Length: 211
Image 1 (cartoon, rainbow, N blue to C red):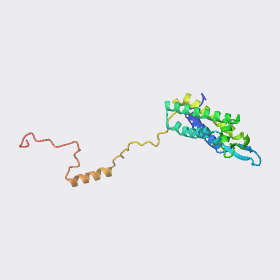
Image 2 (cartoon, rainbow, N blue to C red):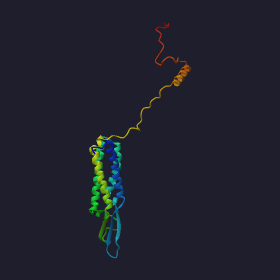
Image 3 (tube, one colour):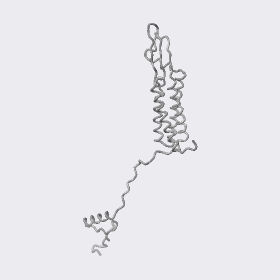
Image 4 (cartoon, rainbow, N blue to C red):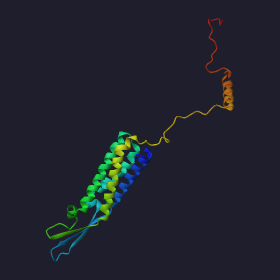
């Protein structure tokens, strides 16, 4: 992205982290695997389902981290962005590991926690993984790693938040002829001479006789 402006890179990183987090949370809420436990006759089989949050708990946690990182990339600057970038890349790595583990069939521990799946009467357990949602988490992980590396390497030079909402000192409006006239009338009411500047003062008497 050598030809991109720093502001465009910041926008890309923020949107990338937000999209990756949204994809991870969406995937975590879906059914990743169907579980069937066969039991000794005459007991019927037990069916269950594993959501992404149950099959891979790190997916939900990583999604929340990525959404927080999208906000943090706007709020911090300098070295802080490098730290956020590292956390983003770590969250992406957690998504990659979780998705690959499920796709490789590593959900037996989670399946055993389903009601009726474990016990002395169970003879076999079959797990049918739906690859679509783990693959979506995998895509989110790849995106998060790319965003994290970008923020780590180039984030120090990105601009900060705009200052249009910062408070600026109030500037007094210029005095008009009407304002001067009103000030003169007020001075007359107080018994002051409006022709004398505030810094001017009558000469103090040199002795008690005023001479």
